[in-house]
Image (cartoon, rainbow, N blue to C red; front, side):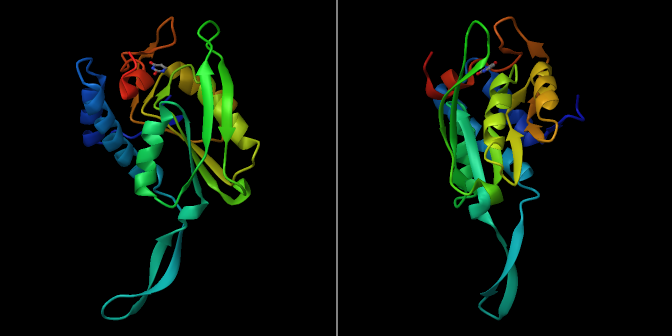
Length: 210
Ligand code: URA
């Protein structure tokens, strides 16, 4: 399983994730923690971002210095919980573009149903990071990546906070060419498709809707 997904197990991430899992953690605190964890995850996920050298002047001399080719990057949160992760990545890379894909889980079939999709133009030469905190059944993530692939971007990665083995298997089966990153690989899904032990409904916990 660990060969299919990269678990970013930095101690700071693990500690903050534990605080997020605790049921008594408030909505405000949960949101702050999501932002902090996303920044740390972003650091690892962007490790191989392309750089280009441009001439700058320091107070002492000219030099060729590395710059991110930021405008080529597209962050695509899966609505709505993905926004928490996506906004933090945007803080790290303010000139990245943002696409949105809206998918909800049919509560009976657990299948992903699309209700919104908007991505930047010229996806051909862009690198995409699709983000959703919870990789549960993997249906939403797999469907989102399938739709993004139709725009033929240069590369795609998938980033989540928590993953269930079932979701990792499903996603890897459908998109073996798309690297997955997570902060933790949990035990299993329950009969309602929630990650166990998990942290509950990420959207509800982020936005205080329950
Ligand atoms: N979505 C969530 O928000 N939580 C889960 O545990 C599974 C899917």
